[in-house]
Amino acid sequence: MKILLAPAETKKEGGDNKPYYQDNFIFPNLFSYRDEIVKQYEELLKKSSTSQLSSWFGIKKESEVLKYSSSILHKPTMKAIQRYTGVAFDYLGYEELNSEAKKYCDDNVVLFSNLFGPISAADLIPDYKFKQGAKLPNISVEKFYKQNFSEALDQYLGEDIIDLRAGYYDKFYVPKQPYITMKFIKDGKVVSHWAKAYRGIILKHLALNNIQTIQELMNLEFPNLHINEIKKIKNQTQIVYHIV
Image (cartoon, rainbow, N blue to C red; front, side, top):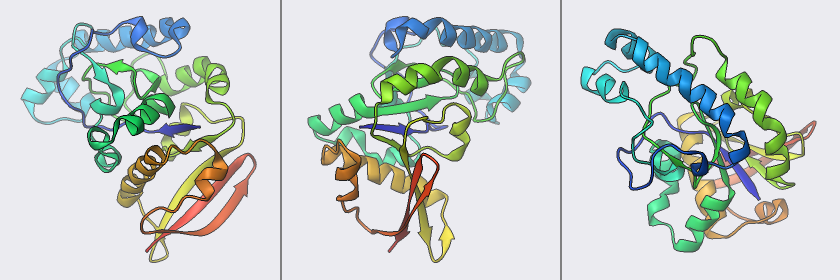
């Protein structure tokens, strides 16, 4: 079982592990591609003024802009699943999970960093800022990662895939094999904020129950969610949940 998850804009500071390095990531044979993006990111940091970076980061507070304007190459790292702190990650509550559930996340979750591309939950990353949709001067990051990592991901993910990402991250990768997506409905409307929360809740319960197959997923009940409809669109099976 592999679960695809989007990153978060907000992140924890600090870390206790070695800085940016090839062995910090899955697909070490493809590290040169990640490094190409990181080098362009580093060049942007060097050449841009504080006001330019404020706009590029989407940050107004000068102290925050200055914090993220420094090189990431020597910053300490931590697991990606611990680094991100957005809504989905708050509801997952990784730090409060038991050791088996943590290992499940480490082994089975693939995140899609706007800077580093596809990474495992256990990959070691520094604190950085790369706003969703931000553009580097000479390259489309999404297309670049999709072109250079899709084949490796097809082999790595296997046959049982749950895609919990927002639709934006299809720009990075779309599975070629059959996969599951989820939509959340409340009072007849598709929800956005609560969708992030329920992605975290679903991942938490997948981990706590050590779910390994799509069949096991279909037999698992999630709190406050009721299956309203199941749609098949080409190789995608979309489970539509009603929030009760």
